[in-house]
Image (cartoon, rainbow, N blue to C red; front, side, top):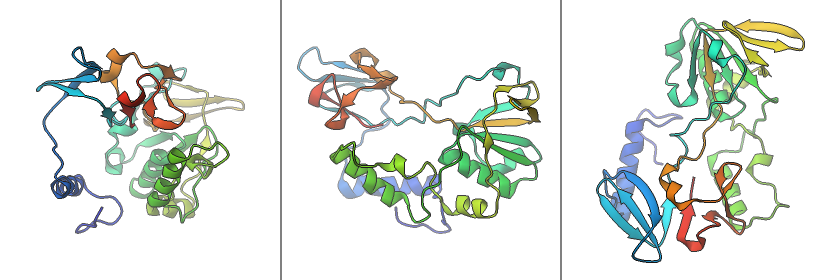
Length: 262
């Protein structure tokens, strides 16, 4: 993505929109909008698929579901969640550190979002911030950036050899500049995960202790957002659509008919 005026690390929504518009124009992509897909099923008049939208139906030999996961935040279940009197939100709804001025905030999760939100809060608000993880945070080497991760993931997809270590072997957290700065200043000190929530915060059983909080931010990831594929009855593996071992983006149920990209 080309740089924009005033952009340092994170591009604005408007910058991303302009970039995507230019991309469509450059490659003359026949994008149709607004179209909301309500379902995908077998084409009753052919051997492909029928894509049903609020603007009519389409027939297709191949369907690529590039819907991502942002629409389905994952909320874990912990004892006492319903009793906590503070505010609970998910990564999906975090906007800025200024929204939590003076609050005692707990950030839950061991990935990029948790590290970045903790760094943001630690550097820009006057309350207390506590980071909680299931295991000690694993940072990727500082010289590993998005392009390096993309190259590693691409090689893993094209050559799915179990003997080759993929992205996950390097770590869980990309040391972007804000995270690196907060880490080097000693602001990213994760504590072990709690055992339960209380009305005023969280508690550990061994050894017994409590921590009060006003806000809990659950940085616990997302799940595939594909309700439109329900009619296909895709085989599931641990809750995810099962894919071909030789081509991890292809459904095991429909061969070349359905490709999934999440």
